Length: 113
Length: 115
Image 1 (cartoon, one colour):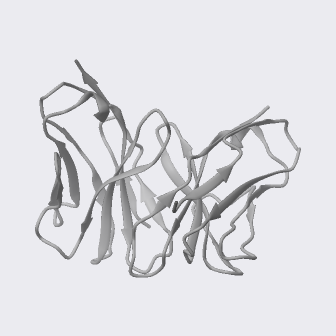
Image 2: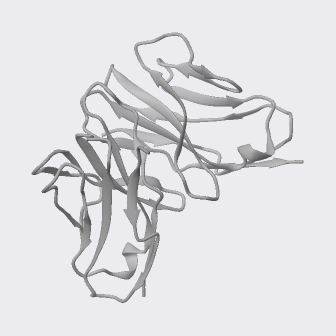
């Protein structure tokens, strides 16, 4: 089944403890990205990648890191999480230029205490 | 930079009736895509409908249709014959051509369909 898989679905952590949210797609998509969703603000893009080893900042990149060492994986790293990073996170992918349909993961609800 | 505004944070409609969700956007681009996404309580993001800016004809998908006014930069979603399963958060989104995965979302409208 074609899908974008995010893990974990729920995560509670404490300030300063490094964490990684994984994202994997099995559709050989070129484009992948991370969004955070906050009430009243909709979804905002954190980082995106247009191919292996190619990443770029979105609208709200501060406090986050990403890597794209393989085409299928695009992990989101919080080196030192803070309470203002408490949010719902989505990974998404799409085939590439000329195909604008996005496939979303099921979301990760992160709480930083 | 693009902005997308949804001016109705919450709406409600009776089952079987019609409801229209508003969306306006601001851009200097001429070619772009517009989308409506549905997010039910499961949190899943579901594509409802999309519109290419170069197409004058309004997109339709079964009970869902849009009113795309390019000059006014308006992109409203009409849901006909509302069903209880339409209860969800709805997001309007904008993507310019050749923009990677750069989607700009509105703040969302929470729709409640009442029996």
